[in-house]
View (cartoon, one colour):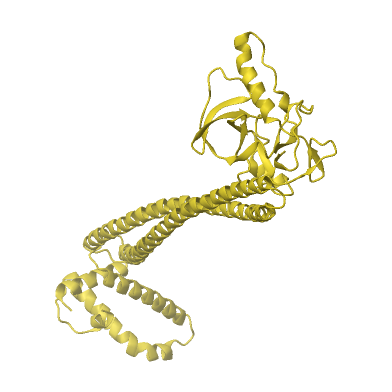
Length: 272
Length: 170
């Protein structure tokens, strides 16, 4: 362990142990620093997740935009086709109208020719008239259906147009979300740098300090419980191989103080 | 032919004899003639020839509506003008719907025809044209125009003998 790092460790342990450091900060400041770094870590992880989700939203919106564009193009084709069908239905109706006039005029000519000579023409006229009426009815029904399709396709086009606007707005929102996530990430990095300067520790050290503090509290609780038992001797003897190095390490820390030299083997390595 | 008999919109049937009626035709370039009185609607082109257009009144209604109401079906194009020839003059009659063409039986009165059980009187185109001319010239002579007799309920004063009839109008 390098000297500066060791010094930082000692300082952190001193503060954790309730001893004021050179900076005069409160004894619990190290734990607060660890909590700050933990919060920073959580915020950083959440921000990364948010950024990834924003990117996925933007990609989905881009795909949706492509789909909507395709749907709009198809709706335009359907509308154009409907107009063509409407024109075709009108032409069919006009043809039936002309054919109806022809049938009526054929009846006139049949009557002019006389009942005997014009019989064939009269029969033909009647037959054509009957078929013209049926055909015209069918053409009118077809025209109504085509008009309904045209009306529906126009409504579909309007809705697609509204969807296109909505998708565009969502795309802009997603882009702004991405930009906000990037800005937040930069701000969090800046916050991390300032936190590092303010606390003197990095996130890894903060995690270890929090862990050590937690273990220390547990150890203290257990030892306190042992001290109340009638015969703690055998138990303490069993714990001695573990506690011995810890006591020696704490002693070294006490002896060296914050300026202890580097390269000393001992429990410090175990803590790191 | 079916047409409106009067201002109230009561509908009536009438027929044209085959000696008078020529054919159904599409009119174009209808032009209103200044000073012309009803039933003259103006002049128009029918198959390239200029004809006088006589109106029997407002049409009985949209052809589609008539078709939906008529159980026998009205042929598309039945609201075209009926081209007639009276005294060597071509006139076109508008404002009615042709329901049938062909040979019809003579009614008991000898003047009308029977169409689907109904007695259908003749539309006297000659009298109608004469009344139209009179209506046009009467104001200039200081007499009020009279309604054409051909659209009244009385039979025409000059009955036409016929064996077969054509151009049944309602």
